[in-house]
Amino acid sequence: MHPLAKYAIGFVVLCFLLFLLAPFAIVPSGMRGVVTTFGKVDPVPLGEGIHLIMPLANRVVRIDVRVQKAETEGDAASRDLQQVVTKIALNYHLDPAHVSTVYQRIGEDVENRLIDPAVSEVFKSVTARYTAEELITKREEVREQISRALVARLTPYGILVDQFSITNFRFSAAFNQAIEAKVTAEQNKLKAERDLQRIQVEAEQKIASAKAEAESLRLQKQEVTAELLKLRAVENQRLAIEKWDGRLPTVSGGATPLISINPQQ
Image (cartoon, rainbow, N blue to C red; front, side, top):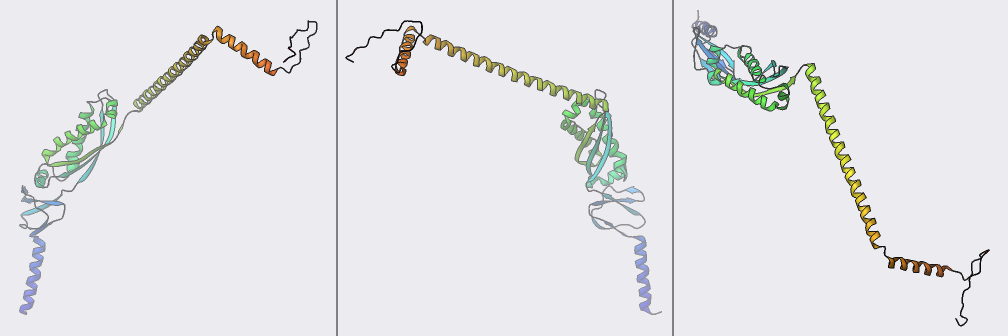
C-alpha cells in the first residue's frame, strides 16, 4: 500500500474517532454549559464558545440564560372570601453564574417545577390580605407585594425576576352584580346631591332678587314726598295746557265755565 494511502486512511480514522468521542463542546450565545463528570455537576459553568472536554467522561448540558416568560393562572380567595381568578405573567432569567446550582437542585424544567408553584402560592398568600374591593382599588400595591414576595422566593434558587404583571382580576358573577349595584347607587347619590345644590342655588338667587326688588320699592317710596307730588301736579297741568287747542269742551246739562280773558293780551 502506498504510504500516502496509509496516511489518508489514518487521517480519516482519526477524524472519525474525534467525531465519535467529541472532545470539544460548543455553547451558543445566550446559554451556559453545565458540565457533568460521570454524573457529578461541575459548579463552574461553561461560557459561550468552544471548550475542550474529556470524551466519555464529560457531558455538557446547555442552559438558556436569556429572559423568558412564564404565564400562570392564579386562583385564590380574598380576605372577605370572594373567589379571585387572574392571569399572572412573569419575566425571568437564570443567573448565569449559578446555572450549575439550578440544574443540580431543580433540573432543566424550572418553570413547571419551581416558578409556577411559587407564583400560585405567593398569589394566594397576598390575596388573602385584601378584600375583593381592595384588590381593585389597591391593584398597584397588590402587584408590588406579589413581586417582592416572588423575588424573595426565587432569588435563592438562582432565578432572577425581571418583570411581573397581573393582567386582570376576575370575580364571581354575584360579586360583579354587587359592584355594579354599588356603583349605580353612588352615581344616583351624586346626582341627587348635585340636584339639591342646584335647587339651593336657584332658591338663593330668587331670594336675592326678591330682596333687591323690595329694597328698590322701599327706596322709591321714601323718595315720594308732598313737594314731589305738587311738582308732578303742576307739571301735569302744564302739559295739559300745552296740548289745549283753545276750544272749550262741550258739556251737556252743565254750566259753561267762565274763563276771564284779558283783551290787552
